[in-house]
Image (cartoon, rainbow, N blue to C red; front, side, top):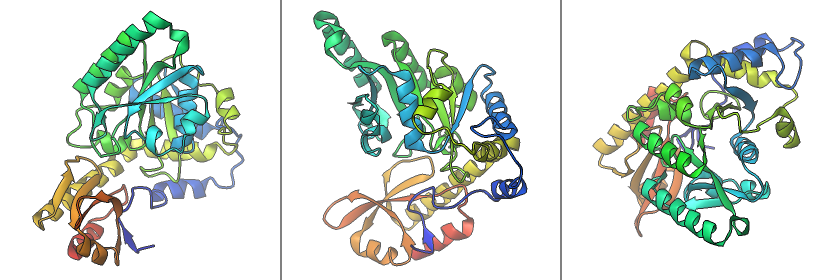
Amino acid sequence: MKALSFACDYMEGAHPEILRRLTEINLEKNVGYGLDPYSQQARELIREACGRDDAQVHLLVGGTQTNTIIIDAMLRHNEGILAATSGHINVHEAGAIEASGHKVIPMPARLGKIDINALESHMATVTAEFNAVGWEHYVIPRALYISQSTEYGTVYTLDELRQLRAICDKYDLYLFVDGARLGYGLMSPACDVTLKDLAGLVDVFYIGGTKVGALFGEAVVVLNKDIRLTRGLIKSHGALLAKGWLLGVQFATLMADGLYWSIARNAIDQAMRLRQGMVDKGYKLYIDSPTNQQFFVIGNDRLAQLQQHIGVDIIEAADQHHTVIRLCTSWATTTEQVDQLLASV
């Protein structure tokens, strides 16, 4: 492993304040399965931040586990979930959704974002077809999955979310937002969506901790009471953590005094410095990303030299002589680290 790496945004451990709090309460005897006071505090802080006292909040361990459980809570076994072709549940989760009995239905997308017109056209077409032949013969689209920010570092605007909400209402779909990188998405200068906006528009989303300051953990926020995400369902998926207070302490710490948002903003600030520095050095942007994931085209010879010292994520070949790479900043990225990277390219 390289001493300096920008290959992904979950390479560091946890924010020092989380480690301090975990050490401080290490020998306390807390009840299990998320019934401890720290988990309750975390849930209250999240409800307050969302402006939704009625929200259910569940603390889970990782992204794939979280996506699988949310989707299983929303769908019956003959129902499927629509997602961008590049969506994490369609590409990077080893068939976890299908393994739980639900089909992922890929939709056209541009730079990670669902093509809204294509989605409307698809739903109009399948609705007419199903009505003519009979719904019992098909996997029924019942939910829409999006990410904020997306796998390409792009963000949905408030207007786009409202358009997606209208389509979901028209065709009786749940709207689910994967928030593994939610902090980075909402703190982007290109994002006009607030946490309260999100809570008012979607049926369920989660606040990612694994990539934004926690050792591990995702906080699920259920806003639609028709979604039966129960503790029993979580347990049946093997996901009801016995030492649930480990999650509670982390999210209570992140949500207190705006820590989650300030450390997420650090990643954005450093990404913008990195981006400008790379452009100033003549590197071409591959994707115009306003978040912590930055994509560049680099010559293969130069890439080989860079990889001797710094970890990067290889995306794809741009042509015979150039490669697309991704450079990620995180909550822990420092100015010195970005300067060291720029000096190396």
